[in-house]
Amino acid sequence: ETGVTQTPRHLVMGMTNKKSLKCEQHLGHNAMYWYKQSAKKPLELMFVYNFKEQTENNSVPSRFSPECPNSSHLFLHLHTLQPEDSALYLCASSQERGQMNTEAFFGQGTRLTVV
Amino acid sequence: AQSVTQLGSHVSVSEGALVLLRCNYSSSVPPYLFWYVQYPNQGLQLLLKYTTGATLVKGINGFEAEFKKSETSFHLTKPSAHMSDAAEYFCAVSESDSSASKIIFGSGTRLSIRP
Image (cartoon, rainbow over all chains, first blue to last red; front, top):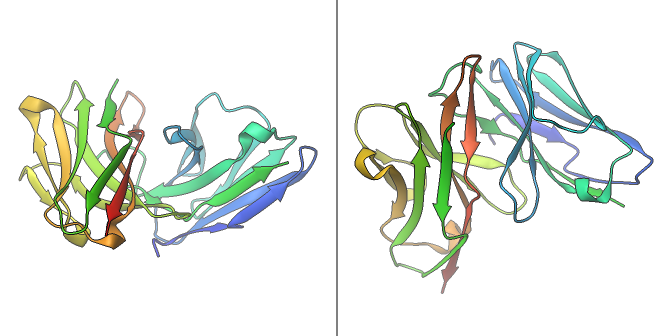
């Protein structure tokens, strides 16, 4: 148990569906991240929020829409996804974005399958 | 920009044998280095980290890593492998730019343990 909780753990959705992934942490961290982990590919950083403000978007398609209402919660809204978007989506948090020596704490991930 | 290279996408050792997972980094500034472990269908968990000070870092589950600046390496070792060590291992470096820092991950090494 890392203190970062993701729901749901598994999600199957059609290409026309709209769904949301949720991430929650009560570690007092101020930075939160979304990563995409696909088979046989390096971990891809998607979005970064620092003190509820989005500070990084790594050229992620607009069919992925993040939301950070407060420092403890992070959402990833999904719509009109493609089969190649099937992956494990990992949420992480850390003390503060600007601190180089602080590690990230990861949730268990949401296994997303787009059919 | 900093980067991380993990040599060998798959390593297999016998139970009780030495585990050696290789990681090389490139960085123009003193790096902060991490090793994470990921068990099947789980998120990433921090094994150990190097920030400053002692170059031999001890982590959880009997793992340790040595920072060698001259070789730009941060290899992960464990004297005696256990079946429960089978997992994916990620080396990471903390990168900082003008705005903030982020963690860059290697492509991962899958460790298999033979009975």
